[in-house]
Image 1: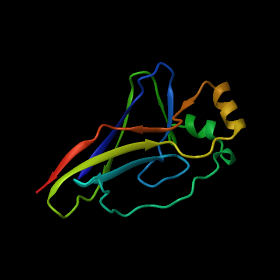
Image 2: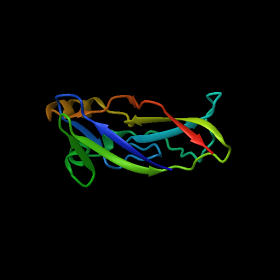
Image 3: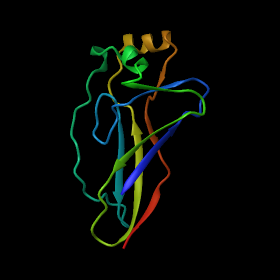
Image 4: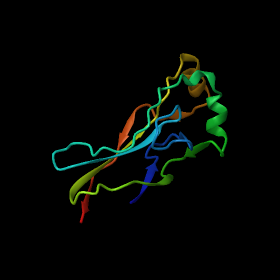
Length: 136
């Protein structure tokens, strides 16, 4: 199955995201999908395992402003990515949960630099509405 993640900035202040976000956790964040069965148990999928990395060692301001590595969403603008996902083999009804996570530990200096440059980044998790999937 192919799933499109669509992220919309509903705020008045521009939102900065990293293009490097994917299914695997990274200092750039992640776009996580999980499928749950009728008992709300996660269907086991190949998972990535990375530790959060201290982001203060990178020039985050430059990376977020670089169109090759960052995305700036003004109010009402949409950014999307498409990802492939393997459906469960067993027939049944499943629920798709999607979560956008901005990872990385932001140092006090980096937080201050973001404020000085008037740059807003995702500070927590954003959950998408649950989607029902029927496998036949």
